[in-house]
Image (cartoon, rainbow, N blue to C red):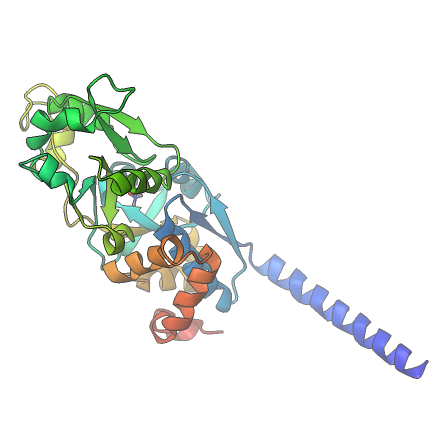
Length: 319
Ligand code: TMO
């Protein structure tokens, strides 16, 4: 009897104190909403960032939205953080949103990036002249599928600038096959690779693919911003997009414009967060090669890199 009363009172007291703590933090801070996208390294590193913020005492939520939707969400404070903004596919929207003041540029990672048409190494024997894009003019047919009526097929992901526009501007005999999910690219790659069939598809670096498959990016005419604004620039005198994506492109962090004022420590930590090429390809490989869940991959990364990520948290911010 006695022990029951004591147990009961402990239970009530702990429930009460849990309740008031939870209320307090809910009042003090609404969750930081971190965007999760549809490619692997981003999801792992978004989880890494979220768990860092959690250890600093911030409540966290993850918001899974497309890159097309994220700009409005970030501008309106529906989402607060995007940890991977890629120059090759996102610079236009990013620059515009920063200029309009809706989102803040929170700095550049150390990683140098590239997003481009890519082929596995064995394709070079089947299409002499690669990686120069002009080789695709004479080889388009080997990339055809039963449905493409002799035209080459380029497999694209759901993030890109208009592939059709580049094909038209460069006079290539190709169709674009857009895959709704990024992971479908790897299904196509594996299928082609098994039979050593020609394939050209969207890929990027850093990514796990480079640790598993030898291959190269197509070398299109070198990128210049003018290529996308001035039709008379470049190979085609009448069309835009007659160039490749940037090589050595940047990778940035973005935040909602109100984040610095409302979550100063998290914002300053985000400024310091800095991933290099190897960290990003390794993060993707933990999931896509080693088959960990996104959450376990993030936890693994945090365990392996504790000194590093703790060094990103400003001194006054450790709780
Ligand atoms: C945005 N992405 C890295 C998939 O090209």
